[in-house]
Image 1 (cartoon, rainbow, N blue to C red):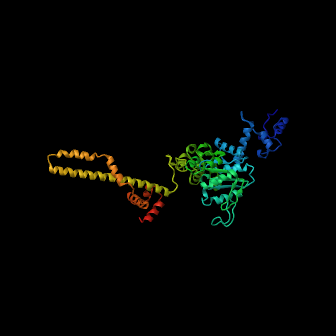
Image 2: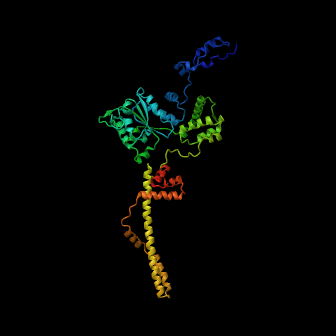
Image 3: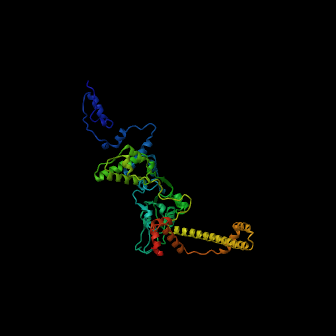
Length: 473
């Protein structure tokens, strides 16, 4: 007997067991008459039969969940296998069939805009309209009209009625990005829509109803915004029915390398160039970097390397030229750690400086008055001592006790004199003080306007405007 050899369609034995049976019957070297069939052309039932058995301890439910997550990632081009990202997608799929509000929290550039689309496409509202609105890009004066609509003639330029996003997206989904930037008045109207489904367009008197699902996202620390009075606490709890925390890129581990490969491949296909690859030391550098700009920053750096680097295998030394080394903080904006309120306009800062300066000037006046009083008393004492010396030159030793008495005068007497002089403090002109501050700052910095502006804590543009206003050019 000739030793049996595998069939030409050996890769398909699991899908077509008849091949193996025919070879056994022939009992000789043969080639199966059935042609090779690619796996993607076989029916799903046979694919499931050909799939490897589940791992020990892994249930069929877990396998179905993993398969569903993989299909979602392929549909929305999501790259990554970290547990935090899988948990986010799992929560999004679980909450999609409901109408609960969702609040997505994460740093800028982590891809928060993908999750609302996943929720909408897997919800009963998937056949209805979906709108993504960036609340931070709409001016404060028109955001109410954009969201809730307006009637004709309600303001200048309102030539027609507008239903607004809440009217157009009825039965659908609204994604409110940067919801932490909404004005307080708009937050109150949004809270009413979430609680009752009712709203009143700008300039109208009739109450309208809508059935809209809200998915919001923010990169602001909402807790801190609530404590500073910039965000309503009741609106936060209304939006936060289902919280989703997007993981930053620095916590996703090997996903960073996978994303780099994806962006490098996209650049190579788009511009028909050789794809860049990473050496081992460059991979370690990518994993250790903090990535304050998250996925957006990684994509920009990959595009820069693909275009500017002459080398196609990137080492750590080459990668170091493209990664900024001064990005130590991952916060979006510096916040004072002392608990003081933050000032949102330069005018408030300037007023604060002027009022503090006014208090310093009053303190300086009091100190000068005290010194003047002590000087006059000392002068009078010296005059008395001089007259005594002229009358009795022998009693020169009497001068020392007199001097000691003058230097050790009680402080409360001087303070009483000051209180009598400053019963009603003098009012100061803020423009005069501001002008004096500008003159002194320019004089101390040798006329350097940029240094003077930095010393005063104002912008260069505000400094130039003040110089022109006071005629200091």
